[in-house]
Length: 383
Ligand SMILES: *Cc1c(COP(=O)(O)O)cnc(C)c1O
Image 1 (spheres, rainbow, N blue to C red):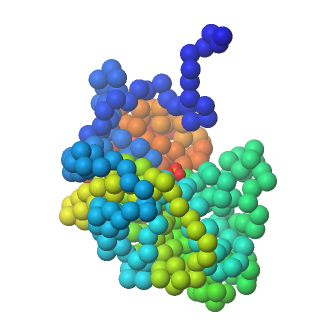
Image 2 (cartoon, helix red, strand yellow):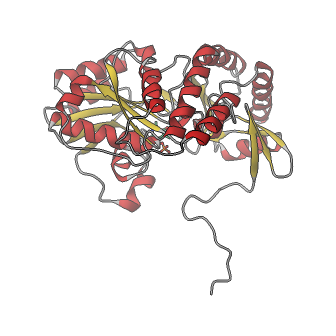
Image 3 (cartoon, rainbow, N blue to C red):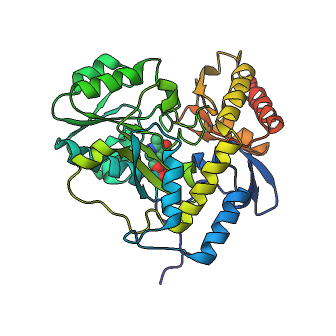
């Protein structure tokens, strides 16, 4: 008999903090202390924690029907798909629903391979696409990959924001180019002006598809409803998850009729498109649209850029980002600064060892946001 109490494997929490409640941009621990969540629970709380409209939709749907096999039609699924595709450019109107970001990428990889009949996926260095074996094969970080090799064959990585390197890597065996419009986990690196346009042209020239992974950048995060709107291009596949259903697990892979007609084979998910996630998703999309959360992200992001200017160069290497997706790259490790922030009631996350990543709920009040930026200035100014 074991003398240890049971515990979580692999996904065990890294913080001693025990969080019991959330509301808007705030979280409360079990001792009743309040925190401002500057990471939106890893980007899943764009519409705020326990958004009342999402909660009401969930409660209503839970009383009607919790789960339904995808083989039956479901009005709530139909309505969610209509609401989701209404936010995207016209040819992106075929939707596959799953339960997480990594699943949305798995589906994108399968759709691209099947529709093109080609094996190769070209992704970017520093990119992150999830941790199941297919998505992990597109993820860059060696420490995420190495213990699980061999991964799926025919994945290549090129330097991000280098169109010449991308052009050299894409050929007539390439099924798809897979990119984040702003690399999130990799330390908040936005696509350079023109890079996604080049990627679109390079993929098209070789008959390859372009997949944009908007799992983190979607739902208003970058100051547009989708980050792709900033680039002016339309990809063949968009992946979405994280905040898409207001904090309820969901994944969506949105593609075109052309990809759908070329697709051979099958792909399914038992819980994908379940009534609860779809009801939450309808409420989250409606809330984000009506409350103009993208415009809010743009405006609050501008405030951050002004307030984070002029930090000491001995401490801060660079501040970068788009909308409310901001990375502060430090000369040293982020951990001690995150610790100092936490002791003042601010929960921020890192993006790699030396980047503080700010990804607050888009509903954060201007007063709270300015307060957090002031605390950051003070902590980073101390060195
Ligand atoms: C978080 C993330 C994923 C993985 O999502 P999970 O829901 O954790 O599987 C994939 N792509 C991007 C860009 C992400 O930020």
